[in-house]
Length: 108
Image 1: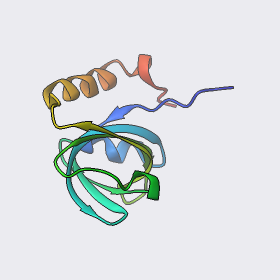
Image 2: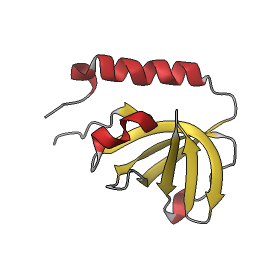
Image 3: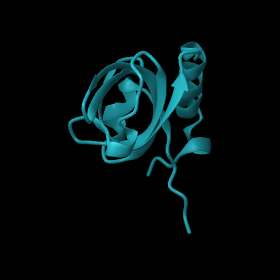
Image 4: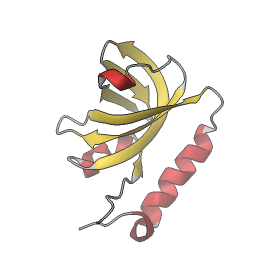
């Protein structure tokens, strides 16, 4: 059984991963029912499922979800990372993921 890669991205990579399952970590900037917005080196719209509608404003959240054609993300899973996150480290991991992409995901 093959495991699907979930490359780590931020807002600037959304267009390159349309219809792909990804991981993205950002700060929750707005909550509106089953929709949310995060700042992940740019604004990203999220479509939450009922189980993941528990996000906390201004906390960091890691999302696993599918990038939609409108560049929003349909959330499959969300994990609250609290408020003590080093976003410079997060960006370094995203940059390394794409600099050495052959290690982290297929480009086929």
